Image (cartoon, rainbow over all chains, first blue to last red; front, side):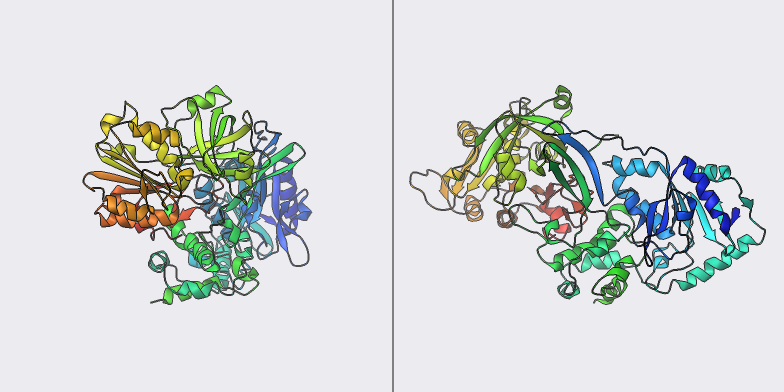
Length: 338
Length: 282
């Protein structure tokens, strides 16, 4: 383990920026911290609870050009590889876990998604342990936890006066070894880290029992429960846009004069047009089918296809729902169904 | 790494109107690049994404047999609100469009060998069934299958697809063709009535027979019920499903029935599989 004084962290970033495209949490306004490109170390905001938007946008952007064309000519694909390798500095462990779930979709055994994979392969992740879980965080229930060291290359934590760095992958260790000015951790740091971890874990106040959920969902597809749960949903889709694991997208063409491009943009199962066919037929015609699809996908279908629940317990869908829908309470309601 | 989102350029070699209403056109496409033509290996029942630059992309079943190398055939229904289907119908011969595929699983032809085949098609869903019928009737393949029955339902005679093919196949003695239309029409020599009741009267034997049913959802549902009543086992009733698709490769998230994506795990499913996936409810 290595450490650096907190007031020197900018020098670490400044070093990394020379060789890498660095992305990290930046203050967007008084309230919002989000991932952005960091051009100098001072731009990073490492005092935050979590970013408003999940880290998925750095690998699966909200809008991305698949290829461009002129007239009816064949598609021209731009170089997908970033100019410099990338570092995401200060991602929370929940978002890091979401990348391993997205890997299953975009880098699975059958079709490979080059747009996602190239970004992923050219990116090193520095997670920053979460000492400030928010009131709706429940990562613990997903087996992640605010100090999880999984799904990252370098694990970082805020010790109060210093940041500690722990290499997790060989690639992470390589980068860490090259950073000048890092000091060896003190003998007491491991104990300190352990205590901070317990403290953070105790702050993850909400819990939800997911043990029997996939099996339960398999039995309640036609349950009257679905007639009620969607009633207050506006279908705004914010729960899916801000979900680190939601990966649904649309593909559309944009054209001006004879120059055009085919882009993919985030889409949402909450929208009526998501499954609306040209004929007018819509297999998920009402909010009931759409809400059921969202929950079934996360907690049952994804489990059947990839062996894991498509949720990391970040609480964003709860924090941002304009009508106060609470995923945890809905899951509890499902658990309690006869 | 192959980029699964990039279409291959294809040229529209021939286009013709398929029905009297005028909302169905059949498109014969040829690859612009010979390499693409050589690499394009598909099985009956698979589909492809057709696209027009600046307009968009949508999935369509391949209506030509894999043994027909000259052209790839698609039949497309134009919908007033269908931006791409309308643009496709406006294309003139020689136009360039894009094609991605083949996609999906296709019909389980291996498992169907040595069986009798009952092919049931309604409306313009006859497309991949045309590919299947062409394929099994090919002299190389015909000996591998037992009795073949093609049951075709259409609203009226003018809506009957692939009239040339039906006429040609009707001359053969190794396929039985049953045609039905919804309401009586003068000089119509075939059956009259909706697909399901006519199929019920026909009462095809389930003995060593695989049934393949494609059509509008209501027709699939009612015909499957008839077949189940005739003691066709659930795993011997095969259908092909459609839903809105964008990626065609199981990532964009919209065409699932339960945990299965129609684009990647289908579009061909047995009735047994559909029952396990909460039937045809999405």
